[in-house]
Every structure is written in structure tokens, then in C-alpha cells.
Length: 96
Image 1 (tube, rainbow, N blue to C red):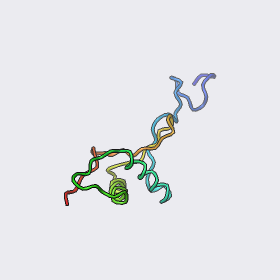
Image 2: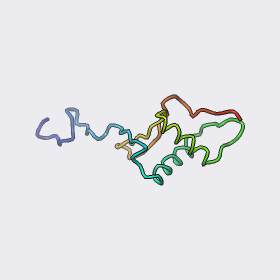
Image 3: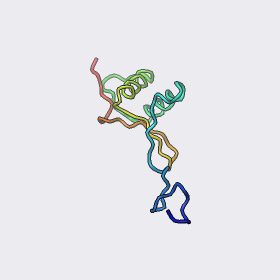
Image 4: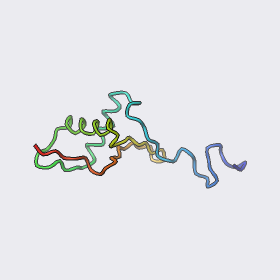
């Protein structure tokens, strides 16, 4: 580290905090977790098939993915945004 670098910068000048951070869903308060999931399902645009699911159904589905480890919450320090990343592609659709 050179004298011109801050303690959080690496040799390239990037800050260590610019890398995405995985946030365990269990570390969030219930109302914050619900808000993060609602934000995700309201913008993710997944086609749920022939029947539309309610917001509560979509939230429950994503919560199950988080609990199983099939999705994770990611904080992006550079843009100050939070997202949910699915580990196996789109949210699965169950046929009625």
C-alpha cells in the first residue's frame, strides 16, 4: 500500500467495499426482508404461467428459495442497491 492510498484501497485504487456483498436473509428484520423481496418480485418480470400469482404467493415463493439456499440477497456498494440473485435460473413454476 502506498502513502497516497486510503487503508481500504488496493493497488488498483479500487476500494475493498466496491465488491458485491452477500447478505444472509436471516440477518434482516422481517419487515425489511419482506420489503426487499417485494421490490424484487415487483420488478423481476417472471412469467408465472397461465395463472397469475398474488404478491403474497410470489413473496412466499422467493422466501422459500432464500431459505433453501437457491437464492441470495446481494448488496452492491457501488450503486447502493440490493437485489436477489437466484442460483438456478428463473423462479420455478408449479402447474396447478
